[in-house]
Length: 331
Image 1: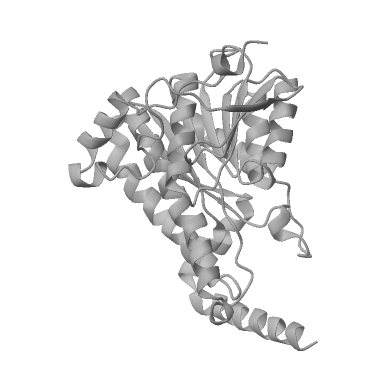
Image 2: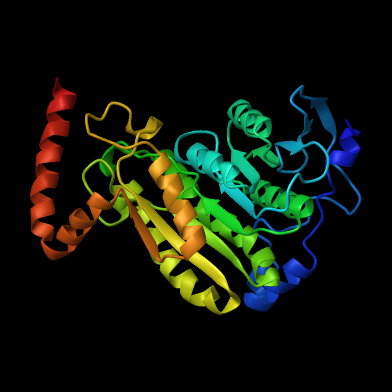
């Protein structure tokens, strides 16, 4: 196996990519460099900590890039490059597995290094070329360093899936300020930070696909999810505006709206739910067709239409849910 210094490439500024972003945004905004800064001087490499038996060099913790797992040797294929956040479990894991099966070269980020390492090992055993990292999307420097590492490794970004998110299983009056800040920073600002870090590369290559994992809750907000729904509604509006801003640059923007699917966030709910694979299939459809929005499963579409045509009916359902929540707290 080559030395870890050969495997872990220098994390340097994007050069032409940074210039593309500055041409796209106002200079005063571009120069702030949220996630697109200069984490390393040219020629520096991440300090290797150990080499795993499954052939991935695990780097140290340099300036925001907490822990990088870089596949051994050169890329094994010339397939498109996909970056997925929140990839260690649930929807993100299903997306990573599906894209790996489709021949994508993968850049995977998640908070838990053990879980993302396990996924990288599984994908690597199947022949996928993977760069993975313990990544917190609330940290712009960490996101910027990881995106730059992906570009340095593979030379381009074809698909970015902003999936990282957390649930908000409490009514808003009971949430602490820390709860509020954490949910907004992860679900909304984390997605924007990821997109902003990836845009310079897509603008430079004049093409790419951005997929934002929103939620049906962004269209139909029910008690117990007011803030969560607000963050997802924000993603929907952001996706609409961004799509119109970058369409002329050949960049596609799709919002995927999952309903209830089987993940850690929905444990305990007594509802018939498909697995997260349906969302992975929707991401693939977004990549192939460039759809504006995709609702999965499709039977949630009538609920969305009903919420717009007869919001009073959704209000009645909401009151019943609130009474049940109150009864459960008293029990």
